[in-house]
Each structure stands twice: as C-alpha cells, then as structure tokens.
Length: 454
Image 1 (cartoon, rainbow, N blue to C red):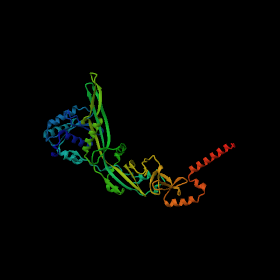
Image 2 (image 1 turned 135 degrees about the vertical axis):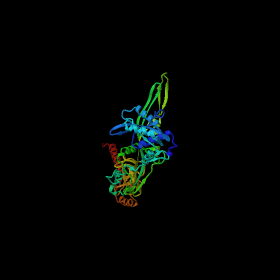
Image 3 (image 1 turned 30 degrees about the vertical axis):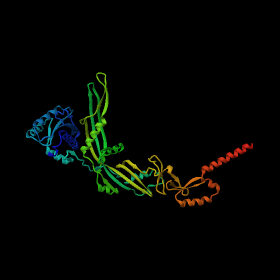
Image 4 (image 1 turned 60 degrees about the vertical axis):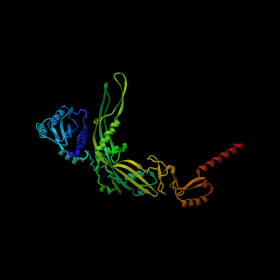
C-alpha cells in the first residue's frame, strides 16, 4: 500500500482509528503515545452479549515478523480490562510466515488472547467498504440518508397553514399554494469522550471525565456547530432516516437541492478533537508543598480525547414562500418528519415595522395583502374590515383620522358624511363628542351654582 507510505507512524494510527470506528467497533481510541507498550489503538466489541477488549498494534512497515506478534500477545495479557481480550496487528505491508504461523497457532489452541493479522491487501478491501481515500489516508463520507423533509401523514404545506392560523382575518382556504423548496444540508453528529488527569507533586489537581455530543454543519468552509435546537432535532431523529431520493422528493417539492459534504470524515474528527482540547483547557490554582500558590494550565492531550462516533446525515432545510397580493411571505425551517425548528418566520412579522414573533397579534389586510401588527392595522370606515396603514387612504372627519381602502371609498364616505345631521357627524369622533358633553355639563353646573340654584 505504497500510497500510505508518506504517512508517519502516528498518522497511520490516526487512519486505523478511523477505519475501526467506521467498521462499527466501540470506544475506539488511541493509547498514550508516550508509552504504548505495544498498544497503539484500543477498542471494544460485543459478541453474544459479552464485551471484549481489542488491543491493536499498528506497523507502518514493509514486513512484520513474529517478534511483533509475540510482543502484542504479552501486552494483551497485562492489559487492564475486566473481561475477555484479543489482539490485532495491522500493517500496510505483509506478515512473514513465522508471524502468520504464530498467530494461527494461538487460534488453533483457543488461546484466550488470540491475535488477528490484517495486511495491506486486507486494508485495501476494507478501504473499498468504508470509503477510505488511500491517496491521503482519510475517510471519505459516504452518505445517502436524510431526515424526513416533511410529515408523511400531512400535506407538505401543512407547516405554512399552521403558521397562518395565528393571523387574524385570513382563512387557510383563502391561501394560495406556496412555492416549496428543500435543500438537503450535510451535517455530522459527533460523540466524543474526554478523559484526562492532571497531577503535580501535591497529587491530582484536576480531572476531566466528559462525554460530549454536538452536531456540525458539514458543507464547504470551516465547520460550524448548529444551534442547540437544531442539534437536538438531528440527534433525536437519527434513528428515523430515509433514503435521499432526489427524484422522489422532486415530485413533492417545487425545487430540490442537495449540498455536498465539504470535508472528509477524518477532517471533521480532527476539528472536533481540536475544539474539545480548547473547550476543556482551563487554568487551575493550587497550593504546593511549600504553601506557595501556583497556576497551572490544564490542556488535555489528543490521546485524552476519543471520538466515538461520527454520524453523517442530511438535514432538510425547507423553505415555503407565499404570495399574497403585493407581499411575499417566507417560512423556513429544518425538518425531521413532523418535528421542525424554525429558521425564518416571515409570516409572524409586521411588514411596516420590526415587530415579530409568535407572541404578537397580527392582522391580514385584504386590500394590499399586508400582515401588520396592531399599531399598523386599522378598521376601514365604510366596510368595517381591517386595512393597514401602508395602503390606506386617510382624511380627517370631526377632527379624527379615518382610514379607507381607496379614493373611491373616501369619496363615498364624504358624500355620506355631508348628509349626516350634526349629532351623527360628532359621533365620528366619539372621544371628542364625549368630551364636549362633559364640558357642557360642567358649564351648566357652574352656571347653576353661580345663580344659587344648587
């Protein structure tokens, strides 16, 4: 496997760690590189309900002889694990006949610490299985699974219909069919363990024992951790994925787009390890044997961080746009069947100001199609229906501003107003009329009091 020859021994161990994790082994991590004692990669498997440890020796050489296999056999025997154990030797080259004979004899004798040998040819077959890029030793992402872009038990536009229910003066039956588009965005769900102990002459001053799970946008550019709600949406629905069938979804949505994974799985793992190193780095204050106070920066090593799983999946980002006369209302969300997280809500937003959010009241204006907050929604004088301040024609009657759909409505009311008796005209401004009555009553009371009548 000459294409891996440019890798260092440590880089080869990184590749093997990725390989075994993708093959389904559990708790895959690298041993401490300062003194691995023949143990490069450690992992576990469950066979017939029993958990077994596997100790892996990585040899980035052309030929591996019997002494390497014997050394690993001894390392397995001394490895601290409460349960059965076995070993593996992995090489890019080949094994000598004595090495193969020794490993075969262990298996034939039912040795409790049997050893499996994987040579360069075996690695080639595994590479084809998991998508290993042999040219740079990195695991490519092979993914054709997606969270459900819509609820199969409901119409694809159901989310938009639900959003419009909060808007006064419009019924779902009056809504035109929105334009629907779905973009399948690649994400990876990463699970990693960080275990580190920091000691000085006074003993242990800091420990890290933490399992972290987060979801990362996996498109081109620097990986970015998704918002907490989106991360929960992904992790809670990883068990309910479906095939990403663009033709099938094209029959449901008006537009379908599929974005590609921007980096290899190995690169996301390396990024996650660096991120967790930074996240867990802290400064600890402690008192030494001489009663002097010290500050020590505790940064976990790469070997302290074990990436357990990297699960790629496509996250559907659904966007609906609804055209209502002069306005277009976007509604965008991340979907996982009936569950969704809103990314943009242009329905619960006043077109005339910054008011937004589902807790505010909004009214639809049938005159222009605007959705407005209470401050920008008025009652049209003639029809007694809502009209927004953006399209309304206004004029003052009885010193009060009145709102009309258009000049024709305004003209009709002018004629109606002109024919009104004085008391009806006054009632066009109830506040003014009420105030006038109060003032008149007060004047009468003053006159009566002044005349000694009361």
